[in-house]
Image (cartoon, rainbow, N blue to C red; front, top):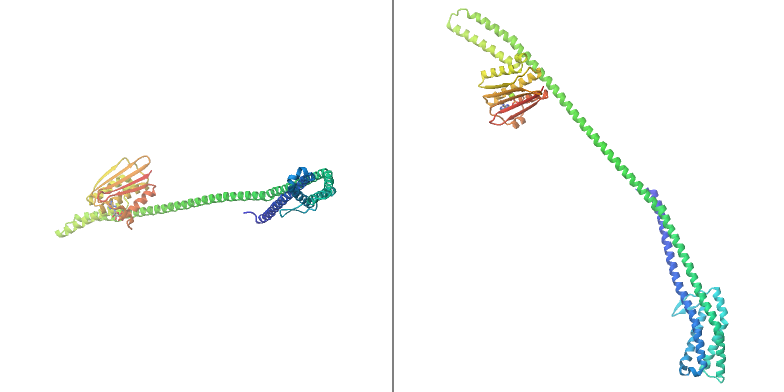
Length: 472
Ligand SMILES: Nc1ncnc2c1ncn2[C@@H]1O[C@H](COP(=O)(O)OP(=O)(O)O)[C@@H](O)[C@H]1O
Ligand SMILES: [Mg+2]
C-alpha cells in the first residue's frame, strides 16, 4: 500500500518524534520531582529560620523570668529546664542553617544559602554569640548560684535584651530572604516547565505536519488509485460482456445462415425431385402410354377378324382387357407422379381428380370443401398437392379410415389446408422417436420452405388432423 521507502522514512521519523516526546516527558517528570523535593526543603528551611526568631524571643522571656525570682519562683524548676532546651535547639538550628547541615528526625534537608544569606549570617553572628553566651551564663548561674548572683544575672539579661532586638530584625530579614529565594526557584522551574511544554507541543506539531499529513495524503492517493482501478475493472468487465454478446449474436447469425443454406439445399432437392417426376410422368404418358393406345387401336382392328375357335376369341378379349387395364394403370402412375392437371388447371381440380382416383380403388369417401381459390404460384400449388397426396396416402395406408375431409381456404394473407381422417390415429411421440418415415417430415419441410407452418394432431381412436398455413 504505502510506498516502502516513504513508509520506512516515516517510521524512522515517528520513532524519533516518539523518543523526543518520551524524553521530554521524563525530563519534565524528573524536574517536577526535584522541584517538589527542593520546595519541601525550602519550606522546612524557612520554617526553621522562622522558628529561630520565635526561639530567641522565648529565650529573652525565659531569661527575664529567671532573673526575677519573685515572679518565676513557683515554676523555677520548669523554667531552668526550659532554658536549657531552648538554648540547645536555638544553637543547633542556627549552626545547621549557617553550615548547611540541617537534619530533623533523621531526615537531611538541603539548605541553599546564597552568598547574600551567608553574609547575613556573618552579620548576625556577633549578636547571636552575645545572646547565646549570656543565656548560657544565666543558665549556669541558676544551676549553681554565685555570691554576686543577682548582679551577674542582671548584667547578662541586659546584654541579651540589648542584642535581642537587633538580632530579631536581622533574623527576620534572613527569613524573608529565604522565602524570596525559594519563590525565585519556583519561578525558574516554572519557566523550564513552560519551555519543555512548548518544545513538546512543537514536536507534536512537527509530527502532524511531517508524519501524519504525508500518511493521510498517501492513504488518500492509494484509495483514489483503488477506486480508479475498480472503475477500470468494471469497464473492462462491461466490454467483456459486450464482446460475449457480440460473439453469441455472431454464432446465432452463423446458425441462421446455416439453416437458410439447408433450406435452399432442401428446396433445390425437392425441385429436382419434382422435375424428375414430371419427366418420368411425361415419358410414361407420351412413351408407354402412346404405345399402349396404339396397341389398343390395333387390337380393335384385329377384333374385326373372325376367330376360328371360341377359345381364341376369349383369349383375345382377355388380352384387350389387359391392355385397357395397363393403359389405366400407366395413367394412374403417371398422374400420381406429376398430374398435368395440376399445372394446367390448378390445385383444386388436381385434388378432386386425385380423390376420385382413390375412391375408385379404395373404400373411401371424401368431403372436399374449397372456396374460390384462384391459381397460385407453382411452388405453393405443388406443395399443397403433395401434402394432400401424402395425407391421403397415410390415412388409407395406416389409419383404416373410410372418410377424409379436405378443406382449402384463402384469406388476404394466408392459404390454409386442413386434412382430417376418421381413422385409428397414432401416438405422435413414438413416431417422432422412431427412425425412418419421411412422409410427415417432408410435409413439414415443404410447408416451412414456403415460410409456412405445419401442425399435426392425432389421438388414438379419434383420427388425425393436418393443418398447413402458407403465407401468400
Ligand atoms: N393418418 C395417419 N393415421 C395413422 N397413423 C399415421 C397417419 N399418418 C402417419 N401415421 C403413422 O406415422 C408413421 C410415419 O408416417 P410417414 O412419416 O408418412 O412415414 P411413411 O408413410 O413413410 O411410413 C406411419 O408409419 C404411421 O405409423
Ligand atoms: Mg407416409
